[in-house]
Image (cartoon, rainbow, N blue to C red; front, side, top):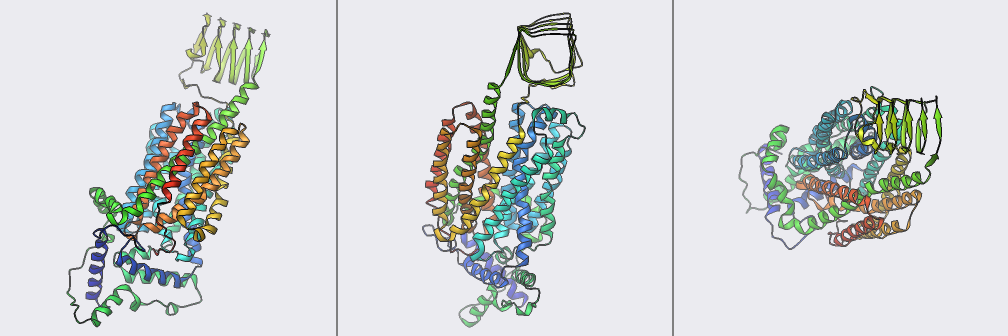
Amino acid sequence: MTNTEETLAEVTLEEEVQALNTQPSGRVPRHIDDTADTVLSEFHERAISECAIGRFHGILLAACGMGLAADTAELLVLGFVLPSAEVDFCISQTEKRILGVVTYTGLATGALLWGCMADRVGRRRTLLTAMTLAAIFDLMAALMPTFGTFLTARLLGGIGLGGSLPILIAYFSEFIPRPQRVKFLSGLLACWAFGGIYVALMAWAILPKTGVMVVLDGQEHFSAWHIFLIVCAIPTPLAVIGLLALPESPRILLQIGHESEALVIYQRIFQKNHPKLTVDEYKVSETDLPSSQKHKLRRENSQDKDQARPHPTTVRQKSILSVLSYTLANFGSLISKIFAANHRRATLPLLVTWIFASFGYYGLSLWFPEYVKYLKGQDFKLKSSTLTNVSYADVQFNQSMENVIYVNGRFTNVRFENLILNHVVFDSCYFDRVSFIKIKSSRSLFRNSTILKSTFVDTDFFPYRFESCTMEGTTFDSMDAFCALDFDYNIHLGEVFLEHLIGEVALIPGLVLAAVLMDRFGRSRLISLSLLTCSLLTLTLAAVKSPEAVIAVEAAFNAVFAVGLASLTVASTETCPTSIRATGWGLINTLSRGAGLAGLFVYDSMLECTVLASCFVTSGVMLTSAVVSLLIVETRHTLL
């Protein structure tokens, strides 16, 4: 094939791709109504099918799976480290919300930004840049000494890792033949679930499991939660290493006219999957390329006149920074392609379904562990010990106390030293010459008590811990190093870790079921059935009262939701044409993160309400998404 022919082929192909946005609305053919896309898709399907499934796809799944595991870790680690980080950094409830907003904002921003770039400079190059950035700042976050620097590193790491999920799904799917697409995409999503399992297991192995252990761990120079962040960041650099061994997506190369490069990649995949065969045995050659076929038809048609045109400058030859500048300057026009007349019918139902489903899923994911902790807290209160009219003189307390109420107690020449008071109340007690030294407390206070000639050294007994008390000759020293906030140490993190682990494991059978049923029942039907079942399941929460029952409902909910999640992922991948696939996935991911963030705030406010409020809100949004999903265009026969 001559240089002139290659130039002509690229220009013609670009013109056909641009025609994608000018076609009339009202019809939604096989692949978003685009002739050029259909020709390229059919060639790609033949070329990738000839490669068969083999060793290459195992490496592909491992590398992309690590990337998705990293995305899960980025979302989940915050919930695991906050009980420790809030004590170390003295973070208020408002600052904790800001940290959550920053994490979701970083992921949402990165998803859209990197998604747009991936359609212009290629999947692999963009992924390597984004995930390298994430690996650097995730490691830095684990080493940051202050809340401000930790917050900044989390934001930048989130922006980098935000590109992983949307681009990885687009990149991964473009290497899979249509008959195996559902199975492999479900397997990729299983890696997302395995990321959650990995985080929960590492939390169990590394982090303190009770509030008292959190306080003791915080006294270490490099506490356990810093180590936990480093361990949970490992999947990101592993994904980068895996991507270095993989080629660019041949489908995106076909789209921008680099057919010869694409053919070389198909041949490499064929050799990787068939090490005993030679390239000559690969049944697709240069004469089969779409541009070669078009030129053959033109030569046979005497009415066609080939005219040389100037060679276009492809964006793959430009630097990441120049493409980033172009993306930001033309952001609106890039996003508007998703809502073009010939795309709108297919994309709008997908986006609405994702928004409502994400709102319910992420919101309920917060609500489940918090409700379990609430039930545990109620049980904790019922088991409190009340000691009335006790008297202590000339003794020393050096063991931590928990869930005790002293009423009308008398303490004379008593020493409390190097201990933790967790939910301890001194009500109407008398203290004479009592020393409190190196004390940390949680939800503990003195009420209606008399405190005479006593000393408080290295304690966190700030004024708000004394309600209607009388003091004489009492001194307070060395309180500057303590946080004035009153953290609740009545947390049993081991149970929270177990609850997360069960919830993540429950996703696996749902993904397996989706892989079995999706091609048989269709994407839209399975999505709707899954979300409808989730809607009904949440109503059962009104009848459960024990933490174990709540965890069982959560596991069932996650398993059923995983069926719809896999179907929705496959449908979204097949709906977006190659030229805007990563951009479309970026928008989906951004809107999903935004809806998830809104869900976190709404469900957080409902923790103080009745269980029925959360049940009805979740059931309503899931039912809405189930109804809207019926409008999703069926794509089971679509070629990428």
